[in-house]
Amino acid sequence: MSEIFFNESVILLDLEGTLKEDVLTTMARNLVDRNLVKESFIQAVIEREGEFPTGLPTAGVSVAIPHTDVEHVNKKTISIGVLKQAVDFGVMGDDSETTPVKLVFMLAMDEAHSQLSLLQTLMQIFQNEDTLKYLISERDKTKIKCLLEEKLDFIALKGDE
Image (cartoon, rainbow, N blue to C red; front, side):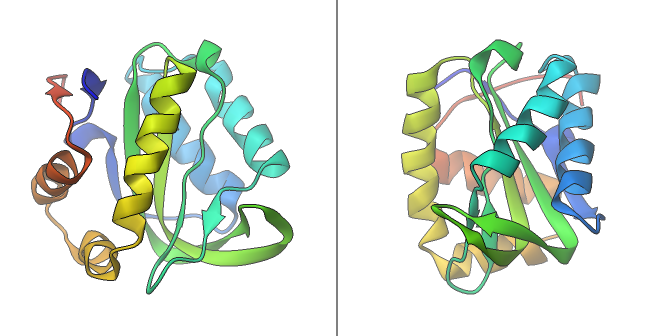
């Protein structure tokens, strides 16, 4: 996996929001502002999350992996949101349940097969409670970036900071 735009500008710490829609809007707006996704990405990712929840009640720290269709994406990227307070997201595969999410991995993939490949790799990270706890406690975006680059095994494209 390569050519994913990933730097400190797409890592958001102490992200505030009361509802999942607030979190998704803030994260997606950040990607729009960097011209990584189209304006339509914001509404599309919110609608998709409402229809197909992505919350995962993983060990220690619940995560969500919101994403949407490739036509809303300008450049392949992954954005990380570390929430100040947990926000309820619907549980993947069971929309009657919610889980208090602290860590959001927003995916913007420009090809369907690359999204699946990235999701499979992310699942390995989500099974490591120590890694998840590190991600929500670390205050240095560069350290977070380096850890995820190593774990996800991709080459980040350099972008504007």
